[in-house]
Image (cartoon, rainbow, N blue to C red; front, side, top):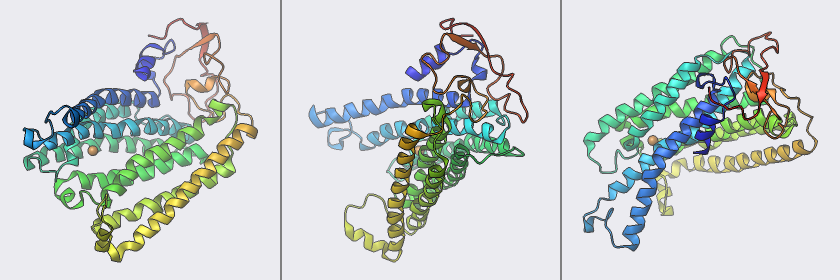
Length: 385
Ligand SMILES: [Cu+2]
């Protein structure tokens, strides 16, 4: 609610909806998805509580209930929730790409529509988590179709990102490295999602480590790579100091290597038949010839965790003795970079900028700084337009 009301009511004069940076579109879409999906989950949790404490039987067959109803309520929340986590990180990468390729983002409107379509579709795919749950098998076909359809808007977003790089003057600064890492890892996760969305393939792969590998490549690539793209990009704005690049490179490359060493082998062991959530250690015997994969993955996980300690060290050191950041160290074209670093209270002090051009129209090679918004009016002049 806070994000949504901020987007609706607190925009600067001239910042029309069509000029919103893509990260704001992604954040707003995620907020809507969360609002619409979390209700059924809470309802399900209350029903579960009633079953346990008040003698109701929503999920209990012996009282006329339906155990699958719990799964339906959970996954009706669960799939949109994936996008609640993914979209803001995707948005951060969409901010980073135009800045470090010195080109406007390709297909701004296309990306906005793709995001909204993916958001809407995310409410009609949930049963792809339940192909082997015992639900009516005739439901597999429509849910397979919607699931494979939902890869279309995401593929469009990926192609738009690639087109934004095409013939760009790419600067491999740290935020861009994280953004490219996100793009590569997320594409791997998107491709395995197409396999899993197909019911015949999913009947075999459901509940195996292939699923674990898939969702780490989508969700964790977003959280880790997209999240760090945002942190490395906005750190100078947030704290007024540059984040150290040497430790930053150690952090990025070690994270990239260990992330893949942890999660890529899980595809193989999943296809080999290793299931998730093993309660009985004897079940490991079933995949004994492939146990080395589990060992590699586990050892690499410690490397992945240690790499994050490098980041924490860098984060702390840079706060304390990082190089002072100018207002716009990356020569970015969006509004937040027109404030000092870190921004004063109210962001622009007592002046409110007015926006006259689109969010990415100025990040072309050789563009001067004439795009800085005019400072007119006083704060509180109203944000709507
Ligand atoms: Cu899903």
